[in-house]
Image 1 (cartoon, rainbow, N blue to C red):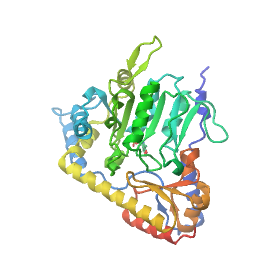
Image 2: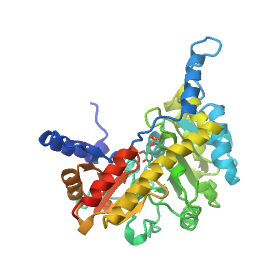
Image 3: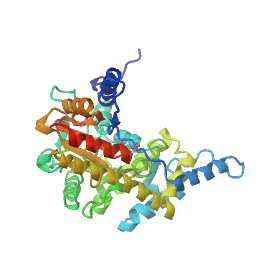
Image 4: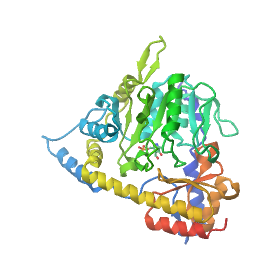
Length: 410
Ligand code: PLP
């Protein structure tokens, strides 16, 4: 008899975006003329940089000729891409990784979700709250948690609240944990951790023999000097941290798919026989067994963001989104709504007026001013009473949305 992985049954249905879609569809049916502006889902809207397009066209032509055709490539990524990543994203900070410490993938969702497979099933997990749901859900699926409780928390998980009260900087756990998920810049709050705050976590991980799983999918959006561009800027992090990066929000690869993970060889865990084993070795085994490489065409496109033209084009698109972020932030302020984030990230996290539950605020925004955002409660219990707007829209829609919010009665 085939049985199922019962851990999957602990998960609530994928409620957030399905429920948003349902409410928007119902409203649209009742009000077919409504001009709805969507600032909800975190997908980009601007096209790929021309340098990437050109590189991908060239790669397609290479595949058309026997002499330049490429079939299976190295599972860990082509050296033209891994070398460009290390040279541009790490060497400027004095960080020197080997090309065998980086793994190119089809995006960081897969990596953030799959990484837990190389950790022991009894490891204690700590997760910031609110946060990108993939870390929690994949640990639930693996059986590292108990049941979902009525208050919205899973048993056996250490939640690290991040609210306006602690300036969105999580406190160190009181108890021992083994795996710590940090997302910086954070989705959904758009906030970051300073060097000093991140140092606390690296020191904790060293002391507790824990590993930090550091999701830096939005690193390209950081503008402030005191925010580390990579966790490896913090002394000691190469012994305790794994870093995830993505080309999705950096350069519009959400549909094209490319990301990478850095696993320094110094990051180790304890085997059952008491010996130390580096996670790099395990991930390499997993990656080469379960993954067959990111498409050559896509890797050529990704590498093009490190050319002079590519860098300039990426910078321009990021500046475009960040101007949207500024407009939203200032618009909310003018409307008397407290807002956070939007300076080092394309997300604005607002406090709902009069402590309104986040789904009620969703309905208010949808029905009164026809704007779709994302209720904070969908990202964890501490997201209740907050709401996320994204800066990934077009400029015109962003401006129109801001004008509507300013006129809204709160
Ligand atoms: N990590 C965070 C924090 C995200 O918000 C996202 C996407 O929204 C991802 C990872 C996944 O990115 P990718 O498109 O590379 O899978």
